[in-house]
Image 1: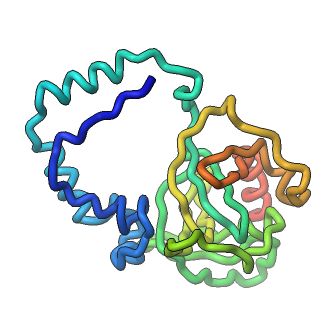
Image 2: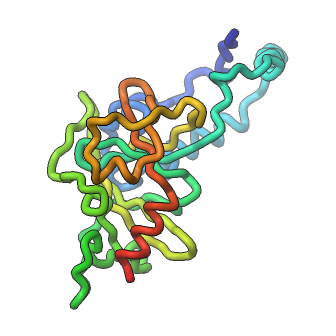
Length: 227
């Protein structure tokens, strides 16, 4: 059983669902702000929503919603950030991510040529080692398909493992996804061996099949590459 909650605020300009990250991503502001939550339009809408009058009917709807017993399909106990490298949609737990930044050109490090280390990038005055997951996982990052009618922007994912920060360039960013760990499936036998050994499983979301990367193994490989 599901309950449809009626919006308590009429006339709200929810552009993030039309041209923003939840829409076709055609908004010209996205290249600058990266995500709608960094945009003043989104912030103003949130403020307007918080200041709205709440009706008794709306309170009753939510009370009925939270009285429902949780079904197995609702027990989404894990969250991850989903991104694309080449043609592969992949994910890592949200806890390893610090922030998302616009793509930046890495500067090569002299006498350092380890596979996967592309150099260092400057993000808001802080230097991060720029690590290529494409190289570490054996993915051809020159390939890739953008979703139909959807603009894509390369990003830098700023992460941290054991107090060591890394910048990971990705071709596209889907966003945060919650899922039930019990619904994770085994990787397909057709996945290339370089990638499959780094996967703990695969999850399905809409028409996407997303590889769930092994957090500990990826962290170990990044640290090893940096040494």
